[in-house]
Structure formats: C-alpha cells, structure tokens
Image (cartoon, rainbow, N blue to C red; front, side, top):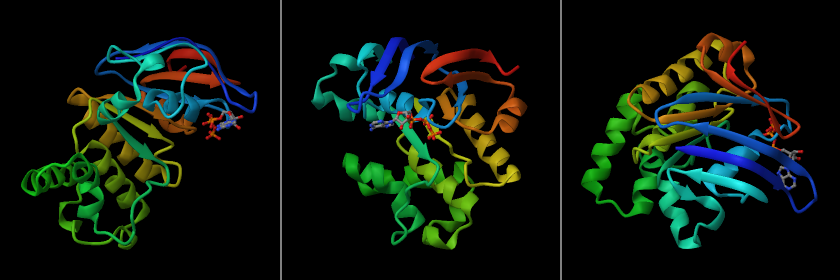
Length: 222
Ligand SMILES: Nc1ncnc2c1ncn2[C@@H]1O[C@H](COP(=O)(O)OP(=O)(O)OP(=O)(O)O)[C@@H](O)[C@H]1O
C-alpha cells in the first residue's frame, strides 16, 4: 500500500532530510514513525501526500508511482489519504459540522449524502451531539476528534497523523490512539508520526525510527 524504495529527499537549501529510506506498510497495517526533532518524519509524510517529491528512489502508494504522477492525478491520490495534524487546522468561525463536511463540499457531493457521511464520522469520534457548536467551544481533545472526523469523512483507505497527540495529556492521548486503532480495525492503513515513546510502547505496534533522515530501526517497539 505504501512503499518507499531507497528514497532520498534533498531540499533546495541542500539539506538532505531523508537518506536511503526503504520500507513497506501493507494494506491494513498500523505503525508509528518516530525520531528526534528534524529527523525527517514530516518530510516522509509529505512525500506520501505528494506535497514533496523524492530526489532519488521511489514512493509508491497503492500502485501509483508518485515520482511521475501527473499533476492532474494528485487530487485522486489525496482522496485516498486522510490527514490529522497536531494543531488540527480547524476553522473556528464555522460549526463542527461544517468543518467535517469541508472535504465533501470540495468534492462536490450532494448535501443529503454529506449529512449522512458527516454524522457517521462524528458518531465514530463521539461528537454527534456537538455538531452545531463552533470548535472554539470544545476542549483540546474534542477539537482533535473533529480533526479526525474530517480526515476520515470521505472514507480514505490511508490515514496519516503528524503528532496528533502533541498538545494533549496522557489520558486524552490514549483515547485518541484508541480511535486510530478502531479505524485500523476496519481496514484503514494508519501511519502516525509521534515523539511520545511512552504511548508508542504501550500500543505494542510496529515502530519505524528515523535518525538524521535514515531509518535506524523498524520493528516492534523494543
Ligand atoms: N521546506 C524545507 N526546506 C528546507 N529544509 C527543510 C524543509 N522542510 C524541512 N526541512 C529540514 O529537513 C529536516 C527534516 O525536517 P522534518 O520537518 O521532516 O523533521 P521532523 O522529524 O518532522 O521534525 P519535528 O519533529 O521537529 O517536526 C530538518 O532539518 C528541517 O529543517
């Protein structure tokens, strides 16, 4: 599903953010990506989303080779991928409902189907009763759930998260991770970049560790 083969990424500044990274994340797998600040985690996620392009090597997502993906096919790739950010990037002047509906509105889905999808997504993250509120009225953990609902509302087969629990306390972080597990349990491939080794160790899942742009470790958390 996600395949990196000898991937290098050098930014225009000359900085080599990824060096010879090779791994496969199979369909339905869930894994963590960890490493020090600046190790290359966000760069790796950006390559999967095709926000950046590999300088050398190949990135393949679901049999699409991203190195020579035509610009017009990028929206098709992005529809396959839900993304959750640390700062959740919500619109605070719109309701929870409108925030979650946004990707479907952009896709041009009809309002009735949007309603069904948005409520199903809010139900999964336990926020059905808060659809009319503005996110500013919600707690940090609830805001992150809105971000997750928005990421999964168009049912993408892949879910990426960049430090999704960075601002949350341990209890809320554990709850957010359980949500990711639930999506994984129904077949979604999940990759989470996180610094939180404590949380990662408790999940007992595959962990890929980047160090200075290289994959230093890949396997069960030791
Ligand atoms: N657009 C860019 N241009 C030049 N250098 C960049 C760019 N984006 C990232 N870098 C550099 O590449 C390296 C890897 O950055 P990246 O954001 O991938 O690391 P990270 O592991 O996600 O770090 P953090 O945990 O702090 O978010 C860093 O040294 C960073 O300064």
